[in-house]
Length: 406
Ligand code: NAD
Ligand code: USQ
View 1: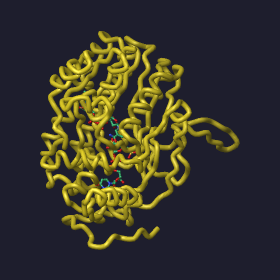
View 2 (view 1 turned 120 degrees about the horizontal axis):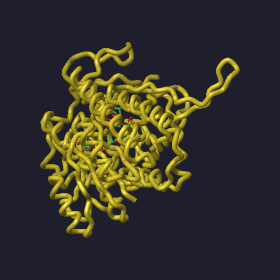
View 3 (view 1 turned 45 degrees about the horizontal axis):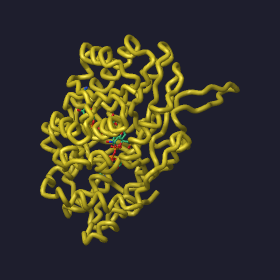
């Protein structure tokens, strides 16, 4: 199959490109190195030393004999995006090419606008180019579980049947996102629903949870293929961050009480889910949604797991409760449905089985590259309600864990 990976130089895009190329698909990727530039802007970096894209692609060719084509450009440019889709004529597009960070979108007005323009405009261009050049192509779009927020009811997979004043309809599940970044994903979903409806396009929105892990079977084939691994405040997700903090001897940065619960999945399962979606395309006309997660954990569950696994490797891991810089509930109901990918054959990796140990060992290998100054959070969401109000002061880890009260 001809597969175009948007954001193919990024964390998930690079691993996906290698996987599909190894399987024999004709793979091309698009990237404009925005993620590398955002690290330069913030003074941060991937823990793992990632190579230039050209070197990565040459190494892949050397190791496997396979070629991945790269188109370098910005999805916000219509001329570029439409030309790539017209020339490559993909049968499937996997769209990772967006800014993925909630904290980055909350820095100030300029970053909120940048994230909106980048994510929403890029996706609109992809939709119009599909309509014009590849109307039978299947768009596999990375959304996020954070689109739903943390409602006090079960979260369905994208759509919910409601009865109101004696009449029934199936409507998009209500969205209550918690950052301007997460909001861009809601806007994307609405735009994709509309494009499917009016042009009959085929699309799957993968509402993905928090991804963890470094290696995949393909990225370990050669050190030049190593994937990025971020741990800074903007781009590191919480388990990835906790593992680096454990190795660096920094008390784990649990925000607030740590009862915040999220869906999570191993990066290897991200690749499996995207593949399952691609090999089982939907009919056109109505956007399909899968909730892409394998397990749910609270922040404290993950912190205590890292502490226990670190102890096995001789690390004395401390857990600290930092004033929560975000606007979010710290204790809440969370029950997202996630059976559709399992029904298609997903066989998940589970966090308890050794992954943390292997992540810790890999991080120890690169511990000299840890930029400690960039770990403690500084970006604040602003004042919220009484429970989540953030006051402006320097962050000091609490000496005692704060008990969860509600
Ligand atoms: P990433 O930043 O590592 O990868 C995104 C890539 O897209 C980067 O290489 C970036 O340079 C590129 N890009 C961004 N805007 C672009 C543009 N306008 N034109 C061309 N290239 C552009 O992020 P990631 O962690 O790999 O996430 C990929 C996608 O998955 C994102 O859409 C993210 O929202 C979603 N997602 C990620 C996670 C996670 O835990 N990593 C969880 C849920 C959803
Ligand atoms: N958290 C901490 N300490 C930290 C970092 C985070 O307690 O050092 C907490 C946050 O307050 C939050 C939870 O951990 O409650 C998750 O935060 P995160 O930074 O790991 O993840 P998030 O900001 O939600 O974003 C990540 C990806 C994003 C994706 C999202 C999936 O960066 O691209 O969309 O996970 S989801 O969370 O399901 O929306």
